[in-house]
Length: 242
Image (tube, one colour):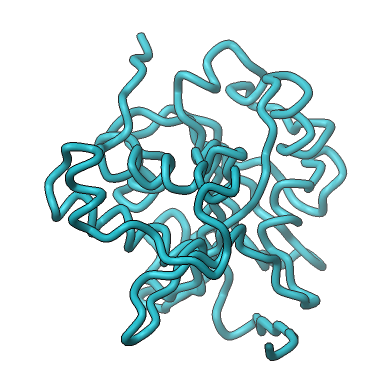
């Protein structure tokens, strides 16, 4: 049985501030209320307020300016560039992609996936794992995670390639509107099964791009861990300087 789990307090506060930014209550370029004001208004502890503001800074909604405080940036803008792993992951048609579906299973959520989905650690999530191959060689492993309450009773749980992209499926089948994506890039050691699928020697680091797809409220709907052999990939972004 799937249970609805209430998001942590700091996440709920961050979502409230984000909605106020989008509604124009806190316009871009203005200061957000102070920590003391937020503590008094919402009746939350200072550490909770600080954590909510740090989350909004990390995702690009706010920024700190020395001597002026915390400033509203507005909705994060997309980076101009040639590499859009998040977009490609969400739009990929499994039935036509050069690769194969290698796993569909209910698993305990990895720590950083649980955090992104605002679920308790080890909460059940649905995993869909797709291996991208080029010329018979594994080049990318995409592990997509969905809250069990969202995925139950859908084709996401079937061990069969979807004939449309995940974004299109979520929006058409589940009426979930995806609004923006956050990508977090890091290096990590793959586990044994990931290393085997990618053909990596033991103790060889891989490049991980954590793709977090969110709706307009900022709620994460899907998290995909895109794992790339570090010695075979290069990421490049071009952008204008303000």
